[in-house]
Image 1 (cartoon, rainbow, N blue to C red):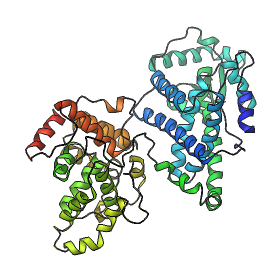
Image 2 (cartoon, helix red, strand yellow; image 1 turned 30 degrees about the vertical axis):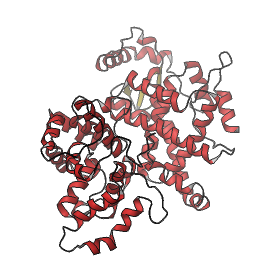
Image 3 (cartoon, rainbow, N blue to C red; image 1 turned 120 degrees about the vertical axis):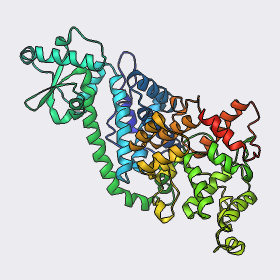
Image 4 (cartoon, rainbow, N blue to C red; image 1 turned 180 degrees about the vertical axis):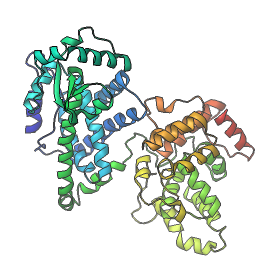
Length: 487
């Protein structure tokens, strides 16, 4: 690909042939790749950006965040000729997938810019200077006269920054290069009180140059995404049979490695287990739908689809699913067995691949559930992610009802407020399974309801020392399980 080869060539130093993926992604690739490569590249970049997003949501900063990004980069976009080609292609693929709405564009921009910042600060100064010049980003250091005039102010700012952010104080701060830039280009640095501002200009030390450049990169990518959004309808029509479906579903795709189409060996649930499991091992979304099914004897289509596929994934057979839905729906006086069979049995068979396209449908991922529109409990819609759909009062009450309170509930509410729903779910798991550190590990939170269920089973297997095969338990087992989860 011409573009990739040109970018790679300019990112190699003459001496060490050092490679760099630092790029403004100005020109799209112009060579063909296979559909398989197209999908593989897209998934790998999505995994990389998701790792960055989740790590930031967990509050990782500094070296911790850098180490996580480096590990994910090495895994999904290694610094090699092949890796650089994948990086270039995958960026443009995700542009197409994430240009279609404001929320998608915001997510893409935020994490692409974070990746750019990491790459920028991890390149040698001489290569950065060359890269800046190639891309028309000419930031000049202040003159010696101005540096001398502002020496006291700049040193004071450096001491304040070192004390406030626990950075290493630099005795030679007066000899560090500073760049005079319009203050509106470094609003984030001003917000953090990291720069001296005078007469509409910010005096930025060389170490914070990344903030200025990242602002320009964000503006460039934002403009490109807007252009892609305008072009998307025509492209969608052109690629209706090949790529449009994949690109439109990419943002809600489950990108983990486990397949939850069927329960794993040894962890099959049964109908008799469901009341206990809803309290003990189901994520809040599925527990909520189970509760509403039992209380109202009905769930609308989207909730039936989400909860029904989840039940399939934890091992219920089609006959057992019939039993769950029929026994609850027919408790409604207006619903008899014949009406249920006529109006609802088809949907269950469809989920199990026995009707329609006869596809073995997989349970919905967290991202797909989060992106599902139209949740409205007041009108009987109970699908979706509670960390997104519940208001703060409702979510706090629900957490308290499930035995989660105090600092853990506050953490969950804070993450839900910040739209980090999967991290909130990871903390909910920790609160219900004392001693686990799910969100502090490489798992990075919850990405699938059936993953939550599986990890819960593993937790109780270790606690009891018994097989992970779920046994039907009497009602007396529920308080014991709850006590184990909250002790």
